[in-house]
Length: 243
Image (cartoon, rainbow, N blue to C red; front, side, top):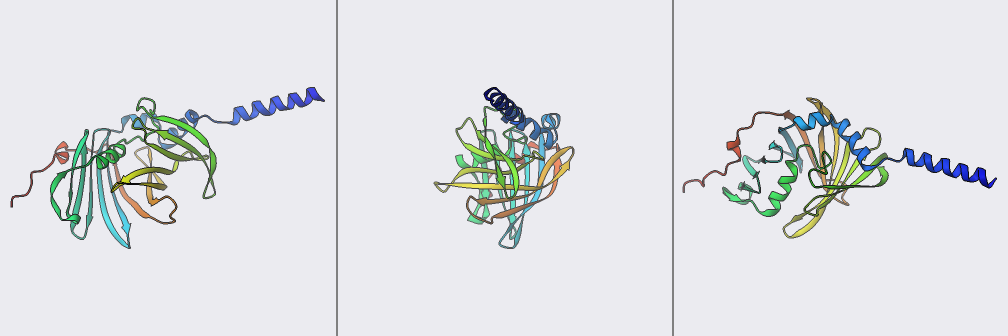
């Protein structure tokens, strides 16, 4: 009986080892579900037209991104357009909502967040080459869906978590911490309504909210252009308006 018990234990151990997935295996399936490595490797630029629902009002948003190099985001509200541009390690912004109609140098926090957003393939694709560390912290349930939870540590030391659907292997949620007015806040993004654009799966609905809150801002994507031609001049800081 002892021999049989040991044999059953060994078989159960082997079965659990085979069924368990490593972080790299989950990432490989995630990349494939998103469109595949070849599609990500060929993705150099992107233009996203969307809108943010805030207090019942729609704010049009246009984001133009050159992978790993530059980004420009325009948000229009009540006839005024706020612009944030990052290029290399610097950038600038115009914020008429704050009464600033001339361009100003962007601060470190703005550039840091913008640099993460201009990684078009995300932190998991070629994560080792990007200097990221990824750890599988476990499997849990997210609003009735089984997900794998991956911990991502960037070269800066910043940590975020991504929740990958255990069936579709699409990204459903991401949590991270940001500094805002000298305060650190933890926020989460919920991604849904995926559509295939030029062979790449893209979320057309993104809800952004503080961790612990039930609602937040919803961004609805209207159009995505993969590899559009981008004029580099849109990233150059304009001269102040003549007084």
